[in-house]
Image (cartoon, rainbow, N blue to C red; front, top):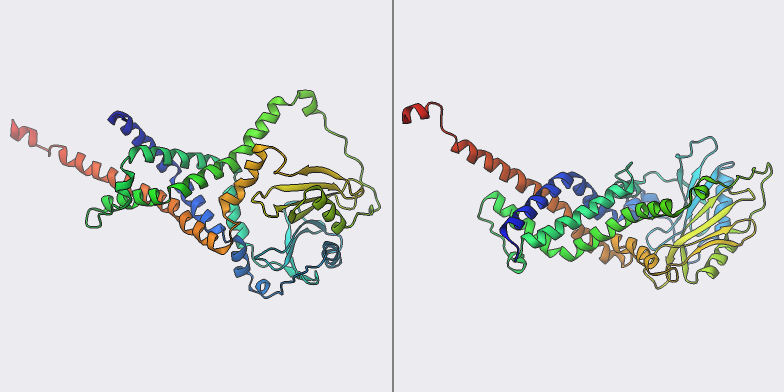
Length: 380
């Protein structure tokens, strides 16, 4: 049985971990609950896109790329997003000539003809995702450490509140503010316990796994190999003929059976070092990290990543994003993720209010315990 001294230490750790991370935890959890509707939010923020027709047989990738080059001559088409269950249109990220590398224009295209509709007015859903994943400008490992902090809060909370079943239905509405908030805090944490563990673990994995992977590669890669960089080939003055994007997509689907590409990324397009990357989901499988990189001139795959055959940890990594964002079960699952995702945001607020109220109460008690001026002389 846990001693009272250990419980006091765990309570102190639980309190301070919540106070230190409270604001960031609220921002990440609130934005994460909302961002499950990222695509729906983008459509809501751009009403004209929702009115575009949905085609059962979308236009070819070659037709989409041709329309983009016609509408934006000289621009670099970096990525094409294919229509999905929510968005009826193609989207493309275009960097116009002379624009900085970080400045891209998101363009919408009709799915039936590939005709360019024009730049997207609002990217509110993407902004919310950037807030949730990167806190706009921070590295992703910060959010990963918040996931670890959330796991610490969960573990210490379970040990501190040992009477879980009794507290599951305890709510004393007629008591003081701190008692009411404490009961709400405990019951909300217990009701959403399984979901909170899932979200914290997957968030910590996605935020910190790349950091540990880069560190491992840095340690295990010999210094000579790390210092040696391949010489970059001079770009040809004349454009090099590219393979058909649709043919490259067919090659990618042959390399990874069941690949349903969500994004097509093009690098160094028009040169002899051009590449096309097809990233997306697997049909009838939850993993979402399948990817095929193909040499765009020869049509030969350069790198193939199939999480089903790349080993256990690769499969686990491929399952993290769908489990974290709940984008695999339709609208009903998104609403479930939304309501359960709001509980950690509430826990960060309620925990802070409880701590502040307790601190104010201790100050009042300390003030009441001090003798009034002159009381010592009267007593003498």
